[in-house]
Image (cartoon, rainbow over all chains, first blue to last red; front, side, top):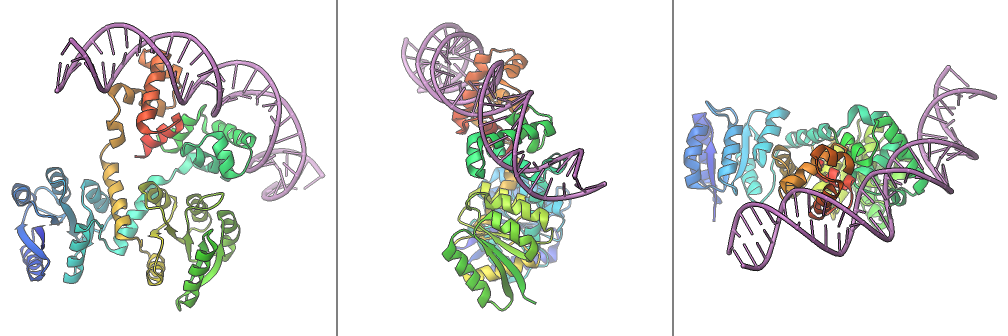
Length: 208
Length: 208
DNA sequence: CCAACAATCGGCAATACTGCTGATGCTGCA
DNA sequence: TGCAGCATCAGCAGTATTGCCGATTGTTGG
């Protein structure tokens, strides 16, 4: 059974081209192609395609908002962004809105069809460069900046265990040091972070 | 010029096997293989490889912390996780710590070599399933706390105070209820979140 | 060499927390 | 009406934490 696909793309030649690619493919069927987010939101719920190809630059409502709405209306739909924007913000917002894949135009026919199959199968197709940007956004999210810097390496290790919910004893076992040493490190951590309990330290470390 | 690679993997047969794969490849050179994070941290800075293959399950310090240290010491190193853990927490922590790729064991030789080339070239190699989990973590970041949903409104209030670092007594005073009631609420929170301490509860609440 | 710091270890007392046993009153729902 | 869940309260025993007093061993920089 072919995968049903809908297209949201305002550029008419490109829309036709994408539609053509899908129609020439054996395992895909294009069930609709729309030039605006408004048209897409009105028609797509009735078509309930399995995959939607979405542009970001659209007249009126943009593609990211359209993704957000579609994801609410159709919980099972897989959305594949197809756009020229490769900035981290566009990528981040699209994925947060509910898209599962992200391709850059221009895209080769074979690549597009492979990505449709992949996203339908539960993957998250994207190019190497996009994937790296996604991964880098994690580093920003996980970095602790100033507060962590003033701690010694060993103190940061101990704090890592506290954050994971380990007790003094468990931390001592994991690190191969004595309970007393863990105790001392934690005292110093509290002094440096100006806190009085594990919960406060964890909260401070995981960003307020 | 071949890509220089170091391996951190406690299982000796696997370590040898990985090393063998690298040695048979024309464009890679294995410059070191270590059985523990501690060994790796001591030796790798002197070797300054371009890529590190890192296991998560290690005796003593785990692979995630090792990644964090290595990323601090060698800013240009590309780290590729090679592990059996495909849970979102392991993936998230690894990428936050500074890894750029994530492969699951067992891995085919060709796949490993392609991933090394990819990560060195600035990509973020990972399997389809891993990529989807990464993308899904964005969706969670955008929406709010599924884990919090199962808590009653009053329990969420209490948890909010715990997250701010308040003690039982302080929370009771702030909420205008007794210490005992706070105690009871917290017991229920622990049961629902499957944790055994404030630190774990705070970590779970903040990280989801 | 000295000072400062990191990392290691120990004891003790005062709290704080956790897990367990209760209990009451209220709501909403079948 | 009865049951389930929420919110409130209390006591007790055991464990964990925190704060403060020590200490030794290295390393690093001036």
